[in-house]
Image 1 (tube, one colour):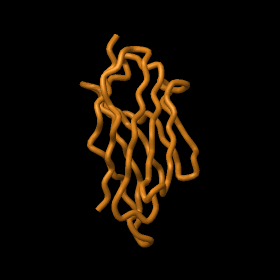
Image 2 (cartoon, rainbow, N blue to C red; image 1 turned 60 degrees about the horizontal axis):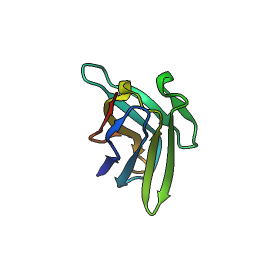
Image 3 (tube, rainbow, N blue to C red; image 1 turned 45 degrees about the vertical axis):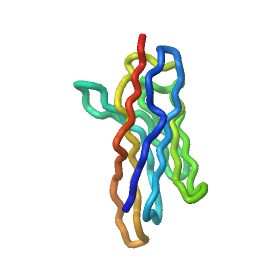
Length: 124
């Protein structure tokens, strides 16, 4: 069983910062791309940032220069990913989800796994 758990959400004023973390645990042979998505009320889920297993990153245009995604693999038997969010804006308010493409065994072709989400609320 594979589990992704997010932490670090909360309420912050515009211009402030938050750091989200995602821990992947369970039976993991290889963890490929990891990413952060967000879904605001009444809107579709969108990709915020993505990082490959070799550290290549991509960002949504609206967060470039403000958000930084990073990952630490296999530290203390946990696969960790974080999203440092600076200069937050009310438009960043959303539920943020961690996602990862994971192979559970060498023979496994892999699946996308999702966390349950963490709420980020930015007040003006």
